[in-house]
Image 1 (cartoon, rainbow, N blue to C red):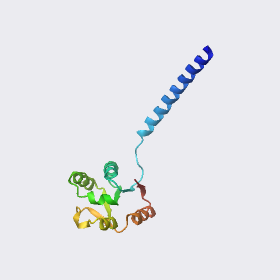
Image 2: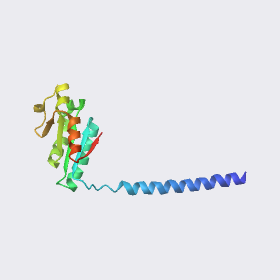
Image 3: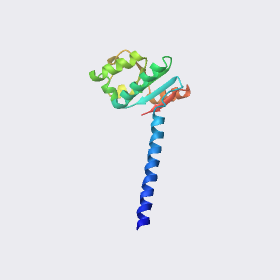
Length: 144
């Protein structure tokens, strides 16, 4: 019985140290966020992902003003692009130099026109095809 208790205690100590070691590795990696490229695009379909993409794009443009950062917007969320609460964030993205591209097919499906949106929005007939074209042009792309 005594050997069993000692064995459990030893396992507990070893696993605690292993967890502490792995945690310290993760926190080190979390701070390595420099980017080396200069062409980025993110395809988004929700307001939550749009907001995080605007934040990311603004950070990248601040670190590298010459970077091309595009957010390609598609799906039902195009109906929300005139939301007054969202407008300040969209304006800030434009001011930071983030390009906002919207799928014209989605606009048509959901009854929105490009003229309904702020002037800084760029239309593309098909968001998926546009992302393929960006990939062919060596953009770092992400769909969320």
